[in-house]
Image 1 (tube, helix red, strand yellow):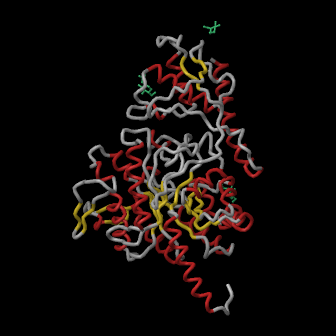
Image 2 (spheres, protein in one colour; image 1 turned 60 degrees about the vertical axis):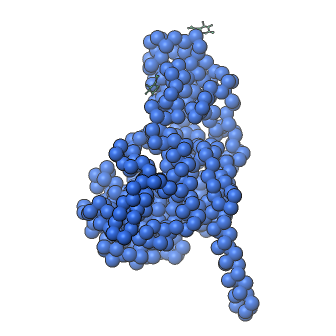
Length: 491
Ligand SMILES: *[C@@H]1O[C@H](CO)[C@@H](O)[C@H](O)[C@H]1NC(C)=O
Ligand SMILES: *[C@@H]1O[C@H](CO)[C@@H](O)[C@H](O)[C@H]1NC(C)=O
Ligand SMILES: *[C@@H]1O[C@H](CO)[C@@H](O)[C@H](O)[C@H]1NC(C)=O
């Protein structure tokens, strides 16, 4: 703006105020966008979904080219992740970090107008279950990436961080005030925090009330929610009524203890799944996420830290190719379905609600089901079902899940259909054993149990930019098909 215009200053102040108000009204939400799906929603549709629902920040788990390209000139602030597997190479060479930043950050900023603001180095690298696998490479990789960002002239715009699991801190007395970093990585955490602080970079932590509940059947359910009526946890003058506040403040106390009370903190992941466990359903997810969104929109912090952290909801959409090592719920964290359809409504303030994705193209409206003539005593039935489920997502079939009430016939139909859809309804993918299955145009869905029709990943108009990723996904599906055909011909 012109430097000789005095009235301008007032205008700027006024505009900033209007914009701030606008930002609050528009939501200012942040979400994780994971892409481990057999049928990923096209990136341009996801970006529209983000914008129309007031998400102005997004976190990617890797520098996914289609996602980054689609985010170009969208204005959405982006946190780009570096997978743990790259920590080793990036820790051992500054040049590797320089190349990584050049290809996956600088190019997208300068050539495509992607508003990259953070690089997330690793993902929960100090998780106890990794048995120290990434303990020696994470900090050196962080330092190399930071050096590379400075070298690229991005030191101010792009901040480094490490998304950590909340298990890097604990409480010495069972109360938030007793918070301290885990003894085995205490000194490492202090060094990392000192480094981040010196480079004006934030800490990032993932906090999962759902997992607290999942891990411990005695966990007081109401304490998991923001509006719960659990007996409060009294810690000195503070009464905690939800585990999110207590967990976050345990971290704040741990930071106080090492002299970094004002260290900025981002909540990198928090959310609630809708399927795959007794406590994972639409009602619970809606209740938790509505409470979460309310406090984000109100700008509410925690008892020990009144300034609210940036909170990235986990997750935007479901991912049916995620590992289910953590549990069957792992593929169902989306606020939206895999196709951007609504699972439940949320009040986003000012009378606004969630809006579903638009322009999604599907495969033909048809399903593969167990043939009415097929007998439950058919000796090939069990193996056909387990075969179908080994190549597709049957996590909705478990007890307490959305299709857990199906009888044996319904079960088989569900499995056959998931296989058929995952294989893009290709010819021959609805023919299990001797006429066990058939195609129907009557939707077998009932109640909460939905029989999917997949997105047509071939029919979407794919801009040339998407070809590399599409190629990868197709290769994945093709190689699965190849294995399937090998198995079938071998059997
Ligand atoms: C990022 O850059 C490196 C070059 O260092 C490259 O090998 C890698 O494939 C790029 N993409 C991702 C997603 O990391
Ligand atoms: C349905 O399938 C699930 C998962 O494969 C299994 O646990 C359950 O016992 C099956 N139910 C019936 C009635 O066959
Ligand atoms: C399968 O069904 C078709 C048509 O319903 C029938 O013609 C065929 O003989 C059946 N095959 C077997 C092996 O049962």
